[in-house]
Amino acid sequence: MRLIDLSQPVFHGSPNCPAHPPVRSEVIKDHPESGWRVELLTIASHTGSHVDAPLHKIAGGPSLDDIPLESWCGPAYIADFRGIEEDTHITTEMLRSQLRGDLTDRIVLLATGWGDKRAKTEQWLRQSPCLGEDGAKWLVHHKIRGVGIDHYSIGGCSDPTNERVHTILLGAGVWVVEELKFPAEVFSLPQPVQYMGLPVNFRGHTGAFCRPVIVVE
Image 1 (cartoon, one colour):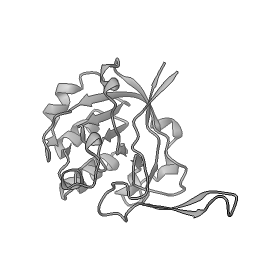
Image 2 (cartoon, one colour):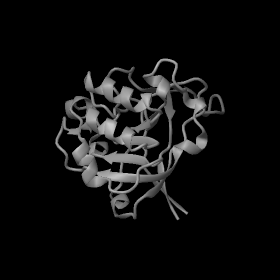
Image 3 (cartoon, one colour):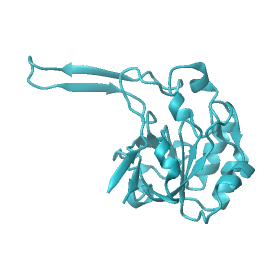
Image 4 (tube, helix red, strand yellow):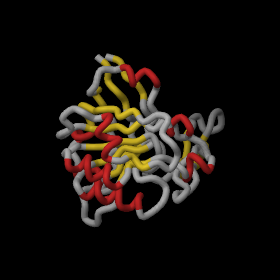
Protein backbone atom coordinates (compact mmCIF):
# COMPACT_ATOMS: atom_id res chain seq x y z
CA MET A 1 0.00 0.00 0.00
CA ARG A 2 1.16 3.53 -0.81
CA LEU A 3 -0.27 6.85 0.36
CA ILE A 4 -0.31 10.00 -1.80
CA ASP A 5 -0.47 13.05 0.44
CA LEU A 6 -3.10 15.68 -0.48
CA SER A 7 -2.54 17.87 2.59
CA GLN A 8 -1.26 21.40 3.06
CA PRO A 9 1.25 22.01 5.87
CA VAL A 10 0.46 24.15 8.89
CA PHE A 11 3.25 26.24 10.38
CA HIS A 12 3.82 29.55 12.15
CA GLY A 13 2.46 32.27 9.86
CA SER A 14 1.10 29.82 7.28
CA PRO A 15 -1.51 31.16 4.83
CA ASN A 16 -5.09 30.85 6.04
CA CYS A 17 -8.54 32.33 5.62
CA PRO A 18 -8.15 36.09 6.28
CA ALA A 19 -11.36 36.07 8.36
CA HIS A 20 -9.58 33.85 10.91
CA PRO A 21 -6.79 34.71 13.35
CA PRO A 22 -3.23 34.40 12.04
CA VAL A 23 -1.65 30.99 12.57
CA ARG A 24 0.79 30.92 15.47
CA SER A 25 3.03 28.07 16.56
CA GLU A 26 5.19 29.02 19.52
CA VAL A 27 7.74 26.87 21.32
CA ILE A 28 6.83 27.05 25.02
CA LYS A 29 9.30 24.42 26.28
CA ASP A 30 12.59 23.46 24.70
CA HIS A 31 15.81 21.52 25.05
CA PRO A 32 18.08 21.52 26.96
CA GLU A 33 16.45 23.58 29.73
CA SER A 34 13.23 21.62 30.19
CA GLY A 35 14.20 18.30 28.63
CA TRP A 36 11.15 18.52 26.34
CA ARG A 37 10.08 20.47 23.28
CA VAL A 38 6.42 21.57 23.14
CA GLU A 39 4.55 23.95 20.83
CA LEU A 40 1.51 26.09 21.61
CA LEU A 41 -0.84 26.47 18.64
CA THR A 42 -3.18 29.40 18.11
CA ILE A 43 -5.30 28.37 15.16
CA ALA A 44 -8.90 28.23 13.95
CA SER A 45 -10.33 24.74 13.50
CA HIS A 46 -10.88 25.48 9.78
CA THR A 47 -7.19 25.94 8.92
CA GLY A 48 -4.92 24.01 6.59
CA SER A 49 -6.39 20.77 5.28
CA HIS A 50 -9.64 20.50 7.22
CA VAL A 51 -13.22 19.27 7.06
CA ASP A 52 -16.53 21.07 7.51
CA ALA A 53 -19.37 19.31 9.30
CA PRO A 54 -22.96 20.54 8.69
CA LEU A 55 -22.99 22.41 12.02
CA HIS A 56 -20.46 24.83 10.48
CA LYS A 57 -23.32 26.49 8.58
CA ILE A 58 -26.54 24.74 9.64
CA ALA A 59 -27.85 25.58 13.12
CA GLY A 60 -28.55 22.32 14.94
CA GLY A 61 -26.83 20.30 12.20
CA PRO A 62 -24.53 17.33 12.86
CA SER A 63 -21.13 18.08 14.38
CA LEU A 64 -17.97 16.15 13.62
CA ASP A 65 -18.64 13.44 16.16
CA ASP A 66 -22.10 12.80 14.71
CA ILE A 67 -20.52 11.60 11.45
CA PRO A 68 -19.28 7.98 11.31
CA LEU A 69 -15.53 7.63 10.69
CA GLU A 70 -16.26 5.45 7.67
CA SER A 71 -17.94 8.40 5.96
CA TRP A 72 -14.62 10.19 5.56
CA CYS A 73 -13.16 7.34 3.46
CA GLY A 74 -14.24 5.88 0.15
CA PRO A 75 -14.23 6.05 -3.64
CA ALA A 76 -13.56 9.52 -5.01
CA TYR A 77 -13.57 11.15 -8.42
CA ILE A 78 -11.06 13.91 -9.15
CA ALA A 79 -12.44 16.64 -11.43
CA ASP A 80 -9.48 18.26 -13.19
CA PHE A 81 -10.04 22.00 -13.58
CA ARG A 82 -6.39 23.02 -13.56
CA GLY A 83 -5.91 26.14 -15.64
CA ILE A 84 -9.26 27.58 -14.60
CA GLU A 85 -9.35 31.38 -14.40
CA GLU A 86 -9.49 33.20 -11.08
CA ASP A 87 -12.97 34.01 -9.70
CA THR A 88 -14.55 31.34 -11.94
CA HIS A 89 -17.59 29.54 -10.55
CA ILE A 90 -17.61 25.81 -11.34
CA THR A 91 -20.96 25.17 -12.99
CA THR A 92 -23.16 22.17 -13.65
CA GLU A 93 -21.92 21.95 -17.24
CA MET A 94 -18.30 22.02 -16.12
CA LEU A 95 -18.97 19.23 -13.62
CA ARG A 96 -20.81 17.15 -16.23
CA SER A 97 -17.80 17.38 -18.53
CA GLN A 98 -15.57 15.82 -15.86
CA LEU A 99 -17.85 13.48 -13.89
CA ARG A 100 -19.49 10.81 -15.98
CA GLY A 101 -19.81 7.89 -13.56
CA ASP A 102 -22.42 7.13 -10.94
CA LEU A 103 -21.79 9.63 -8.14
CA THR A 104 -24.18 8.16 -5.57
CA ASP A 105 -22.41 8.00 -2.18
CA ARG A 106 -19.13 9.00 -3.85
CA ILE A 107 -16.68 11.74 -2.94
CA VAL A 108 -15.89 14.46 -5.48
CA LEU A 109 -12.55 16.31 -5.35
CA LEU A 110 -12.24 19.56 -7.31
CA ALA A 111 -8.69 20.30 -8.51
CA THR A 112 -8.38 23.94 -9.57
CA GLY A 113 -4.60 24.31 -9.27
CA TRP A 114 -5.01 26.83 -6.46
CA GLY A 115 -3.38 24.47 -4.01
CA ASP A 116 -0.10 25.19 -5.81
CA LYS A 117 -0.65 28.96 -5.44
CA ARG A 118 -1.05 28.89 -1.65
CA ALA A 119 0.51 32.08 -0.33
CA LYS A 120 -0.48 35.33 1.37
CA THR A 121 -1.24 37.02 -1.92
CA GLU A 122 -4.36 38.87 -3.01
CA GLN A 123 -4.89 36.27 -5.73
CA TRP A 124 -4.85 33.27 -3.38
CA LEU A 125 -6.66 34.99 -0.51
CA ARG A 126 -9.51 36.61 -2.44
CA GLN A 127 -9.62 35.60 -6.12
CA SER A 128 -9.84 31.81 -6.11
CA PRO A 129 -12.17 29.76 -8.31
CA CYS A 130 -14.96 28.08 -6.40
CA LEU A 131 -17.94 25.79 -6.70
CA GLY A 132 -20.95 27.74 -7.95
CA GLU A 133 -24.45 27.48 -6.53
CA ASP A 134 -25.84 25.51 -9.48
CA GLY A 135 -22.84 23.17 -9.35
CA ALA A 136 -23.44 22.57 -5.64
CA LYS A 137 -27.11 21.79 -6.31
CA TRP A 138 -26.12 19.37 -9.09
CA LEU A 139 -23.77 17.48 -6.77
CA VAL A 140 -26.47 17.27 -4.09
CA HIS A 141 -28.94 16.02 -6.71
CA HIS A 142 -26.49 13.23 -7.53
CA LYS A 143 -26.37 12.25 -3.85
CA ILE A 144 -22.63 12.59 -3.31
CA ARG A 145 -21.23 11.92 0.16
CA GLY A 146 -18.56 14.62 0.34
CA VAL A 147 -16.79 17.21 -1.78
CA GLY A 148 -13.35 18.79 -1.60
CA ILE A 149 -11.38 21.62 -3.17
CA ASP A 150 -7.78 22.86 -3.17
CA HIS A 151 -8.54 26.20 -1.51
CA TYR A 152 -9.63 27.27 1.96
CA SER A 153 -13.23 27.82 0.85
CA ILE A 154 -15.40 25.61 -1.38
CA GLY A 155 -17.63 28.63 -2.03
CA GLY A 156 -14.92 31.18 -2.71
CA CYS A 157 -14.06 34.34 -0.88
CA SER A 158 -17.21 36.48 -1.07
CA ASP A 159 -20.86 36.31 -0.16
CA PRO A 160 -23.55 35.56 -1.06
CA THR A 161 -21.96 32.72 -3.08
CA ASN A 162 -19.78 31.38 -0.26
CA GLU A 163 -22.65 31.33 2.23
CA ARG A 164 -25.12 29.81 -0.24
CA VAL A 165 -22.77 27.07 -1.48
CA HIS A 166 -21.98 25.99 2.07
CA THR A 167 -25.69 26.02 2.93
CA ILE A 168 -26.60 23.91 -0.11
CA LEU A 169 -23.95 21.28 0.60
CA LEU A 170 -23.98 21.13 4.39
CA GLY A 171 -27.75 21.48 4.52
CA ALA A 172 -27.99 18.29 2.45
CA GLY A 173 -25.58 16.46 4.76
CA VAL A 174 -22.68 16.62 2.28
CA TRP A 175 -19.43 17.12 4.18
CA VAL A 176 -16.67 19.36 2.81
CA VAL A 177 -12.88 19.05 2.82
CA GLU A 178 -10.88 22.17 2.01
CA GLU A 179 -7.24 23.18 1.48
CA LEU A 180 -6.18 20.16 -0.53
CA LYS A 181 -3.14 19.96 -2.78
CA PHE A 182 -3.02 17.60 -5.76
CA PRO A 183 0.36 16.16 -6.80
CA ALA A 184 0.61 15.70 -10.57
CA GLU A 185 0.68 11.91 -10.26
CA VAL A 186 -2.93 11.70 -9.08
CA PHE A 187 -4.26 12.75 -12.48
CA SER A 188 -3.00 9.58 -14.14
CA LEU A 189 -4.62 7.23 -11.60
CA PRO A 190 -7.64 5.11 -12.60
CA GLN A 191 -10.83 6.61 -11.23
CA PRO A 192 -12.42 6.39 -8.79
CA VAL A 193 -9.45 6.64 -6.44
CA GLN A 194 -9.57 5.52 -2.82
CA TYR A 195 -9.66 8.59 -0.59
CA MET A 196 -9.18 8.89 3.17
CA GLY A 197 -9.23 12.03 5.30
CA LEU A 198 -9.92 11.39 8.98
CA PRO A 199 -10.56 14.50 11.10
CA VAL A 200 -9.20 15.03 14.60
CA ASN A 201 -11.72 13.92 17.25
CA PHE A 202 -12.95 17.35 18.41
CA ARG A 203 -16.16 16.82 20.36
CA GLY A 204 -19.08 18.97 19.21
CA HIS A 205 -16.95 20.93 16.75
CA THR A 206 -17.88 22.25 13.31
CA GLY A 207 -14.58 21.34 11.71
CA ALA A 208 -11.16 19.88 12.32
CA PHE A 209 -7.76 19.36 10.78
CA CYS A 210 -7.34 16.19 8.74
CA ARG A 211 -4.66 14.39 6.75
CA PRO A 212 -6.21 13.70 3.33
CA VAL A 213 -4.57 10.97 1.27
CA ILE A 214 -5.19 8.76 -1.73
CA VAL A 215 -4.60 5.09 -1.01
CA VAL A 216 -2.86 3.23 -3.82
CA GLU A 217 -2.80 -0.56 -3.53
